[in-house]
Image 1 (cartoon, rainbow over the protein chains, first blue to last red):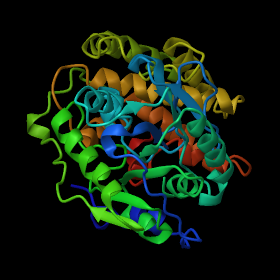
Image 2: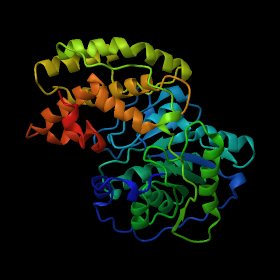
Image 3: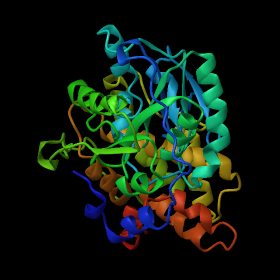
Length: 155
Length: 234
């Protein structure tokens, strides 16, 4: 079990040091399809990308596409932060990027389909607004891919 | 993570997802989030436990049934840390090496590389090593050359990718045997028992002393290791 209150004081101070005003105005998109008909994409801020893709820089608001059929061994991580555990992800890609779990949901008929492309950002060292441009671009790509909804994972 | 959820939803794409730092999510108020008490780096909780991961995913997907938001729901189940006593013993008995940094790192690599290969077999050939364009032998050789000359690496882009690969190589070797590992134990061994940990601690000190490069130091060592840095430097 790890809660913020369980962490050392300097760790807590780092994670809560900045005041983050609410993103405004509030937004809400109601899914049109029920889950069993939805086309879903995965998006992570874990700094994942294909082996051979440009690495993420120290602070970087860009993103990398990950084709749905990518083999787990072809995905690596170049996240700048050293303050999270990577050993679990080494053991199991699904701990951070649960693509096998969503393939199982697809096989069980729980979701409609998976996107042709998933996406990865690197969530470190930037204000929330730094992701506005990249997110807008990815939203356009997702619509082109007929995606209804996104499942988001941090790291 | 919260920002992406917000901006995608604003563009008309419905989102749900995991929150690891509840305080951030509560402040930013993205549309739908499931807060989990798992450690940073483990948003789905437990590696190689499909049932556990499916339960987390299901709880997050259920947020699509909410009529309005923002919704921040707390996941009620913790992911218990693996007890150190039940984790596989470390296969490598690290001992302080002597000689130059080049010699010390080369000796240690000879000790650890068979275990990296065994770990590669365990993971069916999957490895996270590969951020750097250089092989681990070249990486440690260049680290040793810089440390012996007491100089900061010239190519910081190469250095950033190479320290990532070196740490990953060691951690994958240290967890080469089947079984569930205690992550904190693995990192403690890396930072406090290996020549690589000492080398990175020394690089950290050198960067901290450099007026224009001090910012780079923070991607060398985690805050957790810095708390005990004095013990790690030779």
